[in-house]
Length: 100
Image 1 (spheres, rainbow, N blue to C red):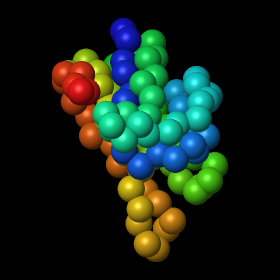
Image 2: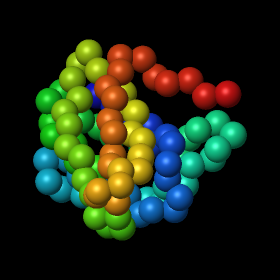
Image 3: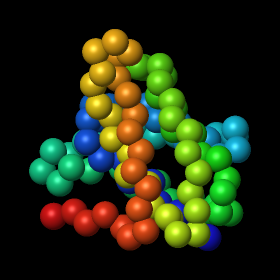
Image 4: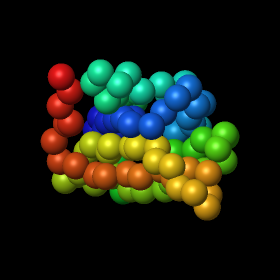
């Protein structure tokens, strides 16, 4: 099935790697377009329950999650966190986010 990762707010040109079950499935530069709040959409062929990891080299942070049959969309945002230099936040959804 096709799953979508929507990289949204907070990206300023970071190199993002998306791993599926520990194997790099995608690598790209993410830069948020402030007018619409979107940096990149990555579509992946996955089986429900596979582990997805979003990893940034700088700042060195990562976030792991699993998509399911009910939640085929993930909204990924990079937010500042004083003590760790940044944090990735992932919200799973059952419908595709909309953009203006």
